Image (cartoon, rainbow, N blue to C red; front, side, top):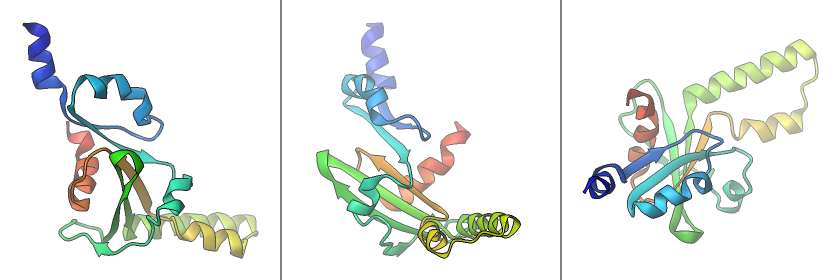
Length: 146
């Protein structure tokens, strides 16, 4: 009886992880709960970001307070999805930090700067659910309120 209660009420929903916790680490749990899903950020330099053109942003999320956020959603193999976001406020802060460091060291590399600038303020998520980009963004933003 207790096991059925556990499966019914605790093996459903979305597990929101941080970087360093790939879906493979929670695979057994996901198999146990068919109504249990995941949302996990992936590294900015992951090959599948470029392979799936996830930085070709096509939408500005509406209603995100204190930020302007570009988004992109791509279906990938295995019934999974990549959701990419570029937060303009975070991008500006990361770029300023990068330039301050280059100024201090007196070694700005234009090629490296151009390459890195593309990913300033970017976060990409992998999920096994197809949801709106705004829903994914808000779920991740809300992860600390639980």
